[in-house]
Amino acid sequence: MDMLATNIFPGIDKTGLNIESQKERLAQLKDVKNTAEIKEAAEDFEAFFLTKMLESMYEGVSTDGMFGGGHAEKVYRSLLLDEYGKAMAKTGTVGVADYVMKSILDMQEMESKGFIQG
Image 1 (cartoon, rainbow, N blue to C red):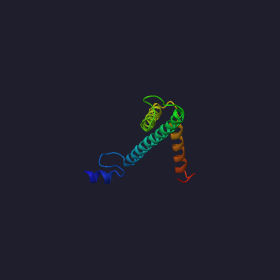
Image 2 (image 1 turned 90 degrees about the vertical axis):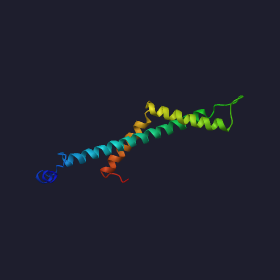
Image 3 (image 1 turned 180 degrees about the horizontal axis):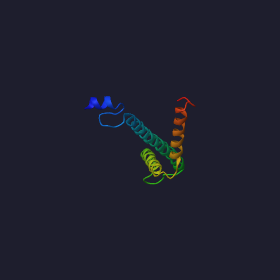
Image 4 (image 1 turned 120 degrees about the horizontal axis):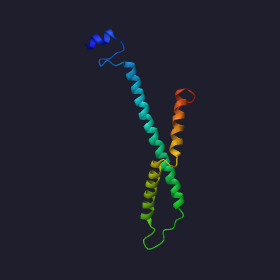
């Protein structure tokens, strides 16, 4: 039956679906994956940006006192600010990731049209 279907109906696979539409669907799924990766990269960049901004804000805060200061506090503060940056980026309220994602997608479109080489 499979032989018959492919010989009588070119472009149709054994499931009865158009092969070209399946190829288009796979290309769309690849784009969705690519878009998800771009979104993740843009969010990571926003988190990094916000972390650096927070580090400069907390640079002048003194940690004097009985339980303050020392190397451990510097490490802990670094980790804490990193998590703050990730949490702020995840909310999407700052909007840096949106602009980064749009820029990446625009560059990919220009590259696919041959305007730039990547």
